[in-house]
Length: 116
Length: 115
Image (tube, rainbow over all chains, first blue to last red; front, side, top):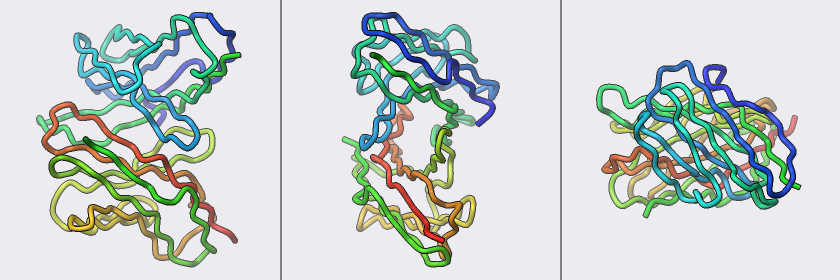
């Protein structure tokens, strides 16, 4: 979805380096999410944020941190990258409009991260 | 605990034939159910969802899915497959009673449609 952008699209780095992946959205959604995708494992939730002041850990948050700089921006950081963090990372947004929180999520194009 | 199972890693079908991609789920309450599709080098795209009402849900690109509460299933179907339907398909579930809004995804099923 072009309304959700991720930078960079590809990144190769070395073990121990600090890496930041950025996500921006123009959909005006309050809720934002970071997932990682590994072959055969589907998508696993790293962190999610329901608004600028709300950050929650997902199922695999160890080794990651996030920052919600604004409604439209949600960054994922790897403080000290390790090879098993090599994966495809997706940002997503959703809009619980009208108090109903079952609306679908909209995904960015992904960032392919390789840690050597 | 919420979980989603997609029992088939791969589904192969000839163009023009009907296709089914299977999904079963487990939630503590009533579910919201979703199907997403991922084309190569792209993010996930929403296909359809079941919230309430009619058990047969119609979505994008001619896809439909049937919610079966007794079998806790939400299989994705299409009457006549196209080569362009070849992609990775994900089923996802959310507990209706949860305020967190988290989706739980299956591992994905790779659909290949042969010409």
